[in-house]
Image (cartoon, rainbow, N blue to C red; front, side):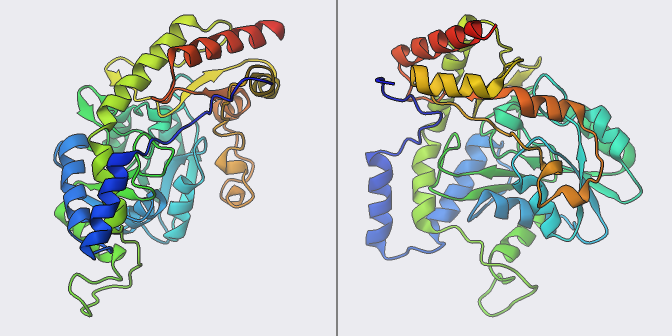
Length: 366
């Protein structure tokens, strides 16, 4: 391969972010402080319709603390997808509750409302869908299931900054929602997470849990964690927040070009009333997915990702929660998906090369 590799993901960090970090370092206030508070308010205003937000040190911490703040614990069951990153189920298990895996719907790879309904037991306390790859889960149908059975509804919005459903932003549906700020996400703070909270009680609980269980120094109210975000990370996040909507538009334009020109693969559909923010542009390849991934990289210099080749219910760490579980749509997706580059740094030349590569490789294997 003589061509430069087009990476599957490419974090964008520039002079603005560096200047923001320098400003914080010069201030001498590096730990959680005014930058975090400002970031929380700005994130709320820009992405979740003003709902109270609490910043933490990672997306996984955001899920874990959100679950604890909402009262999830031993004896409870929380229904989650298996086709997602392990942090979704890990966070449930870390509370002492049991993750219960349900199947996905095939079009958008998100939790199937029918599968959720079939997984409900007398111990079910909540449903936690993932807005996978940046496409919103069917929160209307999932909300109806939750209401019907008296269940809580949470959101793993790690990949979905700015996605909407029927004009409503993700992160504003559940009792809490978590957004990841990891470097490869649609925006980053270097590392971190943001918890969007439906009530003052949940917000206060998350704040207590992130700070050793105290609101005032040495007045510990409960056993908590050190899950604070630093002002250094918040300063990066504040700059990225001013750019994420433009980057999202770039991702959507790139995705539209790919969908118009790719052949022989299943391109990602978008549900009626949904706005997809394309954290990943994920196609399905019916035959020999791994051959396609290898050929794209080695013959055409096109990087890609497979998210996720091993469903959660078959991971060594989580399979004891799901003995003999059959999730057919999850298994098919895990064998077929490929995420192609869609990030804002792509040039038209890059997009043309991606299309040519995919069409050539898929045709060669037909």
